[in-house]
Structure formats: C-alpha cells, structure tokens
Length: 335
Image (cartoon, rainbow, N blue to C red):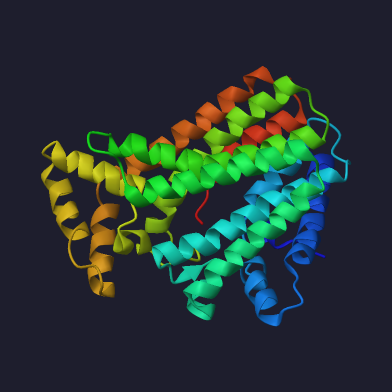
C-alpha cells in the first residue's frame, strides 16, 4: 500500500534508512486509520471515511514517527499513538468546517456540504470516540495526554469563537488560539511518539516545546497559503468571508490603526459585504498586496526557528536533523 502522504508532504529525511522506517510507519498508520474509522452503520462509515480518503498531509503521524527515531522506533504502540493523533485532528476538522461554513476540505466538499451540519458534527464526535478507544489500549498516561490535548483544542476553539477580551491584544490572543488548537496536538504527537519509543523524560520535554512551536508555525504558514495558493484544497479567502481571524488580517488591521492608508483601504474591503465571489476576490487581492502578508510569513519563519533552537538540547544525529528539516518543511510549502 502506498501512503497518500508522500504526494502531499515530502518526508523531510535525508538518511535513507530513517526515511524507509518513517515511510513504513506511515503506511501502517494509513491501514490502521481506515480500520479505526470503519463502522457497521453505512452512513456512519461513509461519513467517517470522507476525510480519511481525501488524503491529507498526515503531519501529526509523521512527527510522531520521526520523534520515535530518538528511541526504539520498532515498538508497536507508536503506530497506534500516531493514529490517535490523526483521528483527533480529523474529528476537529469536521467540527471546524461546520463552524466556519467551509465549502471545501482537502480538495473535496466538506463533510457538512455532503451530509449536513448535524451528521458532520456527530461524525466528529464519533471520531473522537474512536480516538479514545485506541488510546485506551495505550495506558493511563496516554489517556491523560490525549484528554488534556482535547481540552486545549476545545478551549482554543472557544477563544477563537468569542474573540479577544476588551483590552487584549488581538495578535497575542490569536497566537494563543493557535497554540491551543494546533500546537497542542502537534506537541502531543511528538510526545507520544517519543514516549512509546522509550525516550527519557528530558528528550520528551524538548519535543513538547518543539512541537508546540512547530504547530504555531504550521498554522501561521497556513494563514498565508490560504490567501496565496490556488492548490490548497480549500477556497481562498473562506476565513475572510466567515470573519475568522488570521494573522495577515490581524496585522493589516494593526497597521490601519497605526495610520497606514493602504491598510485602511484593505480593512474597508474586509469589513464590507464579501458574499459575492467578486467582492471576496477583491479583498483577497488587496490583502495579498499589503506588506502584512510578508510580515505574517516572517512570523511563521520565526516560530519555526524557535522550534529548531529548542532542539539544541538534544544529541546530534539523523533523527534530530530530521526534526530540524521538519520544522522548515511545515513553513516552506505551497499547500
């Protein structure tokens, strides 16, 4: 079986033996993932498989498998740990797309467009339940990690929905949302991969710090890609239309408040009626042309650099180099 990951996100591994180990692990994850979402009820089965079969980058399983290279990567629990992380991520996507009214996900209609909002939400719940079943077999420590991560995912979505408190800096608020919604699960992926590979606590601690920063960098890069790429599998500017904050929009608003006339003109478009494709395209084009786009990209690179710096406390070797490359990969992509 060939994993769909390789076609979307190239393995950031120079060492051929390590690359084969990670690729073999990803293929095992793909098989196990399909087993985990299978259901006797036809509707539940179809809806659960909807996003799994659409592919995806499999960033979280990949990181779990690379982190495991710092210990014994042959331990069978590692694949199940990677599956738990991807199932949790997939479940959150079903909910996110309903809340954001996103028409596309991974190049296919979002689940709520196919099955309706209620079924999409219930499918997300079902996938969370399946993740819980898998993680229960990994022991109480893994259950605690997954539960705390799930809690942070919910808190992140909660704070994104209600927005910053009066007087709170919107950019700082947004970074915390990203840390909770994205960084927490990517950090958990690295942690579980290393933990089940038998890595010592200090290595695991480094990987948690690294994973959290990589997660923020990944989402910041997504913010830019969603506005610049024509091959992201999502409709460009959907977040703008739905009023979902992203870093370029927050930075252009900050610039407008500081007296930047170009930024003020962009904000006027962003705050206008974006219900038509023409209006949305004009707003996206204006935002692309503002320096806020490059500033957002540089912010993503900064978080990736900080993630790499966290690895200085690990011994040098092919696994550590793969983690360094992974941090660069998540921001240096076009989709």
